[in-house]
Image 1 (spheres, rainbow, N blue to C red):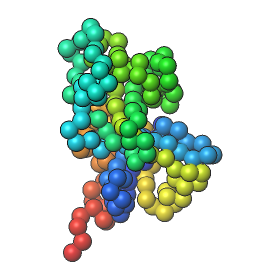
Image 2 (image 1 turned 180 degrees about the vertical axis):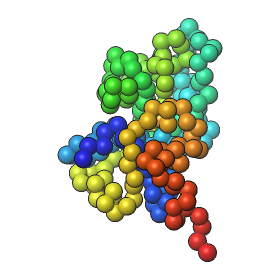
Image 3 (image 1 turned 135 degrees about the vertical axis):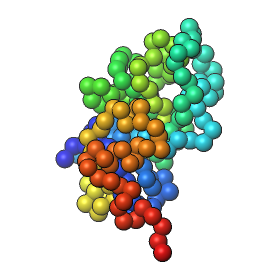
Length: 187
Protein backbone atom coordinates (compact mmCIF):
# COMPACT_ATOMS: atom_id res chain seq x y z
CA UNK A 1 0.00 0.00 0.00
CA UNK A 2 1.58 3.26 -1.14
CA UNK A 3 -0.38 6.35 -0.11
CA UNK A 4 1.83 8.98 -1.72
CA UNK A 5 -0.42 11.58 -3.43
CA UNK A 6 -3.40 10.46 -1.32
CA UNK A 7 -5.48 12.16 1.33
CA UNK A 8 -5.76 10.90 4.88
CA UNK A 9 -9.18 11.90 6.18
CA UNK A 10 -9.54 11.89 9.96
CA UNK A 11 -12.39 9.73 11.18
CA UNK A 12 -14.88 11.54 13.44
CA UNK A 13 -13.68 9.59 16.50
CA UNK A 14 -10.13 10.95 16.11
CA UNK A 15 -10.05 13.68 18.75
CA UNK A 16 -6.36 14.65 18.79
CA UNK A 17 -6.44 18.48 18.79
CA UNK A 18 -4.13 18.78 15.78
CA UNK A 19 -5.60 15.99 13.66
CA UNK A 20 -9.30 16.30 14.59
CA UNK A 21 -11.31 16.72 11.35
CA UNK A 22 -8.10 17.06 9.38
CA UNK A 23 -7.16 16.18 5.83
CA UNK A 24 -3.50 15.29 5.37
CA UNK A 25 -1.93 15.28 1.93
CA UNK A 26 0.65 12.47 1.87
CA UNK A 27 3.84 13.71 0.21
CA UNK A 28 5.94 10.61 0.78
CA UNK A 29 5.16 7.05 1.84
CA UNK A 30 7.60 4.19 1.77
CA UNK A 31 8.82 1.30 3.92
CA UNK A 32 10.42 3.75 6.38
CA UNK A 33 7.21 5.65 7.11
CA UNK A 34 5.16 8.55 5.79
CA UNK A 35 5.25 12.34 5.64
CA UNK A 36 2.38 14.69 4.91
CA UNK A 37 0.95 18.19 5.21
CA UNK A 38 -2.39 19.03 6.84
CA UNK A 39 -4.32 21.03 4.23
CA UNK A 40 -7.31 22.27 6.21
CA UNK A 41 -5.97 23.85 9.41
CA UNK A 42 -5.21 27.52 8.76
CA UNK A 43 -2.95 29.29 11.21
CA UNK A 44 -4.71 32.20 12.89
CA UNK A 45 -3.74 35.63 11.59
CA UNK A 46 -1.03 34.39 9.22
CA UNK A 47 -1.34 34.90 5.48
CA UNK A 48 1.17 34.29 2.69
CA UNK A 49 1.87 38.04 2.52
CA UNK A 50 2.83 37.92 6.22
CA UNK A 51 5.39 35.18 5.58
CA UNK A 52 6.88 37.20 2.72
CA UNK A 53 7.10 40.28 4.95
CA UNK A 54 8.83 38.33 7.75
CA UNK A 55 11.36 36.99 5.26
CA UNK A 56 11.78 40.44 3.67
CA UNK A 57 10.68 39.14 0.26
CA UNK A 58 9.12 41.77 -2.00
CA UNK A 59 7.49 40.28 -5.09
CA UNK A 60 8.86 42.08 -8.15
CA UNK A 61 7.42 42.78 -10.52
CA UNK A 62 4.22 42.47 -8.48
CA UNK A 63 1.32 40.86 -10.36
CA UNK A 64 -1.75 42.37 -8.68
CA UNK A 65 -3.97 39.57 -10.04
CA UNK A 66 -2.15 37.07 -7.78
CA UNK A 67 -3.66 36.98 -4.28
CA UNK A 68 -1.28 36.83 -1.35
CA UNK A 69 -3.97 36.96 1.33
CA UNK A 70 -4.44 33.19 1.40
CA UNK A 71 -3.99 31.64 4.85
CA UNK A 72 -0.89 29.67 5.79
CA UNK A 73 -1.68 26.14 6.99
CA UNK A 74 -0.49 24.30 10.06
CA UNK A 75 1.11 21.41 8.18
CA UNK A 76 1.55 19.34 11.31
CA UNK A 77 3.12 19.23 14.76
CA UNK A 78 6.74 18.77 13.62
CA UNK A 79 9.14 21.59 12.63
CA UNK A 80 6.42 24.23 12.91
CA UNK A 81 8.96 26.94 12.09
CA UNK A 82 9.81 25.34 8.74
CA UNK A 83 7.98 26.17 5.53
CA UNK A 84 6.61 23.64 3.07
CA UNK A 85 5.11 24.87 -0.18
CA UNK A 86 2.78 22.56 -2.09
CA UNK A 87 2.30 23.69 -5.66
CA UNK A 88 1.67 22.67 -9.23
CA UNK A 89 4.68 22.43 -11.60
CA UNK A 90 7.25 23.67 -12.42
CA UNK A 91 9.63 21.89 -10.08
CA UNK A 92 12.83 23.70 -11.06
CA UNK A 93 13.39 25.24 -7.62
CA UNK A 94 16.47 24.54 -5.48
CA UNK A 95 14.72 22.06 -3.18
CA UNK A 96 11.71 20.48 -4.88
CA UNK A 97 10.28 16.99 -4.67
CA UNK A 98 7.82 15.89 -7.34
CA UNK A 99 4.99 14.08 -5.57
CA UNK A 100 2.87 13.39 -8.66
CA UNK A 101 2.69 14.62 -12.25
CA UNK A 102 0.74 17.66 -11.02
CA UNK A 103 2.02 18.22 -7.48
CA UNK A 104 5.37 19.39 -6.15
CA UNK A 105 6.63 20.18 -2.65
CA UNK A 106 9.35 22.81 -2.31
CA UNK A 107 11.16 23.87 0.85
CA UNK A 108 13.57 26.45 -0.57
CA UNK A 109 13.25 30.23 -0.48
CA UNK A 110 13.33 30.60 -4.28
CA UNK A 111 9.72 29.44 -4.69
CA UNK A 112 8.62 32.07 -2.15
CA UNK A 113 10.40 34.71 -4.22
CA UNK A 114 8.08 33.92 -7.16
CA UNK A 115 4.89 34.38 -5.12
CA UNK A 116 2.93 37.43 -6.19
CA UNK A 117 4.68 37.57 -9.56
CA UNK A 118 3.82 36.13 -12.96
CA UNK A 119 6.48 33.45 -12.35
CA UNK A 120 4.74 31.75 -9.42
CA UNK A 121 3.23 28.28 -9.92
CA UNK A 122 -0.47 28.35 -10.88
CA UNK A 123 -1.62 26.79 -7.59
CA UNK A 124 0.20 27.26 -4.28
CA UNK A 125 -0.36 26.34 -0.62
CA UNK A 126 2.07 27.41 2.09
CA UNK A 127 2.29 25.43 5.33
CA UNK A 128 4.41 25.62 8.45
CA UNK A 129 5.28 22.25 9.96
CA UNK A 130 4.61 18.73 8.79
CA UNK A 131 3.17 15.41 9.93
CA UNK A 132 5.16 12.18 10.07
CA UNK A 133 4.61 8.51 10.82
CA UNK A 134 7.25 5.91 11.63
CA UNK A 135 7.57 2.59 9.82
CA UNK A 136 4.21 0.78 10.02
CA UNK A 137 2.61 3.44 12.23
CA UNK A 138 0.31 4.92 9.58
CA UNK A 139 -0.76 1.50 8.38
CA UNK A 140 -1.67 0.57 11.96
CA UNK A 141 -3.63 3.80 12.46
CA UNK A 142 -5.60 3.03 9.29
CA UNK A 143 -6.31 -0.51 10.56
CA UNK A 144 -7.43 1.07 13.85
CA UNK A 145 -9.98 3.17 11.89
CA UNK A 146 -8.34 6.51 12.68
CA UNK A 147 -8.20 7.46 8.99
CA UNK A 148 -9.98 7.05 5.69
CA UNK A 149 -7.85 7.25 2.55
CA UNK A 150 -8.67 8.67 -0.86
CA UNK A 151 -6.66 9.48 -3.97
CA UNK A 152 -5.70 13.16 -3.85
CA UNK A 153 -7.76 15.64 -5.84
CA UNK A 154 -6.10 18.89 -6.95
CA UNK A 155 -9.34 20.87 -6.68
CA UNK A 156 -9.68 19.92 -3.02
CA UNK A 157 -5.97 20.50 -2.43
CA UNK A 158 -5.86 24.00 -3.91
CA UNK A 159 -9.33 25.37 -4.65
CA UNK A 160 -11.99 23.97 -2.29
CA UNK A 161 -12.78 26.34 0.60
CA UNK A 162 -10.76 25.25 3.63
CA UNK A 163 -13.84 24.62 5.78
CA UNK A 164 -15.21 22.16 3.19
CA UNK A 165 -12.09 20.08 2.56
CA UNK A 166 -12.75 17.44 5.24
CA UNK A 167 -16.28 16.78 3.99
CA UNK A 168 -15.33 16.95 0.30
CA UNK A 169 -12.30 14.67 0.65
CA UNK A 170 -14.52 11.99 2.23
CA UNK A 171 -17.03 12.41 -0.59
CA UNK A 172 -14.30 11.32 -3.03
CA UNK A 173 -14.84 7.78 -1.74
CA UNK A 174 -18.61 8.10 -1.33
CA UNK A 175 -18.62 8.81 2.41
CA UNK A 176 -20.83 11.47 4.01
CA UNK A 177 -18.53 12.03 6.96
CA UNK A 178 -20.87 14.55 8.59
CA UNK A 179 -23.43 11.81 9.26
CA UNK A 180 -20.98 9.28 10.69
CA UNK A 181 -21.11 8.44 14.40
CA UNK A 182 -18.82 10.62 16.44
CA UNK A 183 -19.41 13.84 14.48
CA UNK A 184 -22.06 15.31 16.76
CA UNK A 185 -21.69 15.77 20.51
CA UNK A 186 -22.60 12.98 22.88
CA UNK A 187 -25.85 13.08 24.85
